[in-house]
Length: 186
Image (cartoon, rainbow, N blue to C red; front, side, top):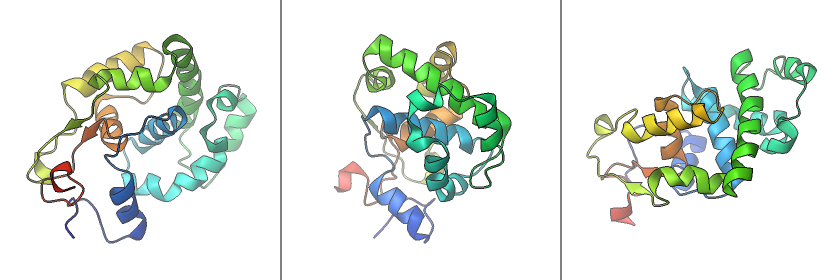
């Protein structure tokens, strides 16, 4: 069975690739979680974050934005001592900032899903890349998303993070043509 070239033999990585990456996500809380995790990845590998994902879920109360938005400075200090997550002050604080922005977006748009999926007209983009080298790290769409997210108060949402996010939540399907998960093979 062929998979995208970035996938290793690690069972956690294989499962993520086969059952999550590139599959459309519409559930608000899951979209919020993935945005936070992609932000945590900045400057690191996805493998690092994937291994810590369960720790993140515990540390951030299953990514309940209503709870996270109320975190105090003391709670943030406690999180910065948690060896199970990336202990970068700006990244930890960004989750709190993003929870507040997320709640404002939900209120304005009815759901975060409506807002975030509007960047692709609510339809996944399916690319037809031959190899992993063909896949960009960002594009005009991720730049547009990044600008808007920043304008709406989000942090750690640069164009590369936004592109990775869109791949992760299935807004963009970048499985390579030889991968069994590419829609042409399903």
